[in-house]
Image (tube, rainbow, N blue to C red; front, side, top):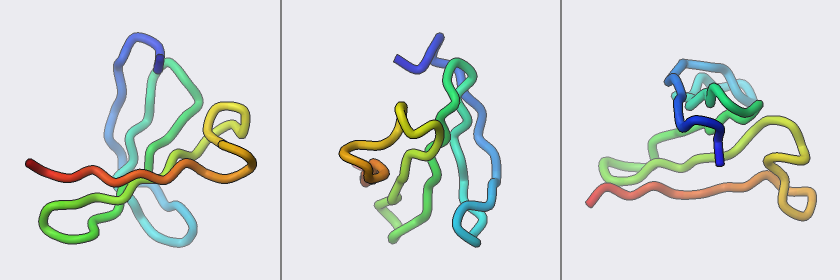
Length: 66
């Protein structure tokens, strides 16, 4: 649950690169996105450690266009 489901998309620097970043209104969580190719984006969750870390590691994911 990310609050009421509302978020904004911003260009934010993460680890030295500007990323398209989903900023959630209801939580201190940021999803940073980088393009892999024409069909896929790689994402990484960033924010408060208790919200975004799994066994001490950031949560990575891939979004693929149908």
